[in-house]
Image (cartoon, rainbow, N blue to C red; front, side, top):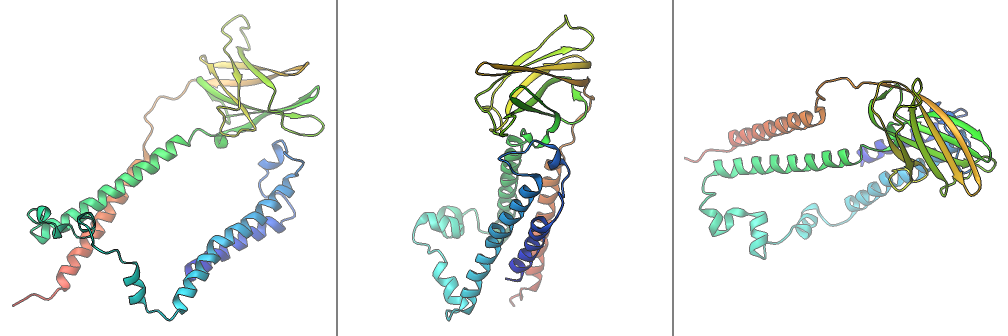
Length: 299
């Protein structure tokens, strides 16, 4: 309960700062196009209110449930006994007490082997969970969070914003995301056709890779995303053609492309998981050793 209540205090303090601030705390939100008629400050206030209400429920409700359990008349022993699974099947015996099965009793005769198997199984489960988490991170790493606003302009009935990686682009396939809005109402126009064509600024007759943007491949369904191959180093111009019914406008966005630096990416996440696994295994074995030292020896 103290852990949950202290965590809720932190959530409440941060929510209050967001909800009652009279200025935008993140200046980058003031530069991006607005959606649904919300100003950046109104969006920040709404975020603080949602975080305050929904976030507090995640801490307060479990704290109330734990308090009710602590104040109930049932003892802790009765509660533990009521939720303890019963060994009513060979499969349950295998999960809860492998040494109770005749097949495994031949292999788990010594305490040394059982303890080592427990440590190894713990390490294997931890490594499997870490690899699954790493896979989820790898699958969700290609999103719009690593993009920055690179262009914002209006022409005709459209307001267009272009998002790409910040700074100089690396030679190769680069992802561009385009937000098309109605110039007057600021409504997002999802039925527009967006064509991207890149060309070198000093050689207009050279290679001109092109692509058609679509929101089907974009993590943010309000953006239309496409990959354009920029194979050479230098100054490039990205020509953007936006079509909607009979309206058609063109925009030009300059980019500078550099060759990627050669090197080996250090797998920091996997190394940290391996180090943490080794630490947990060492702590586990150390606690086992201390428990053996505390047990009384028989005569």
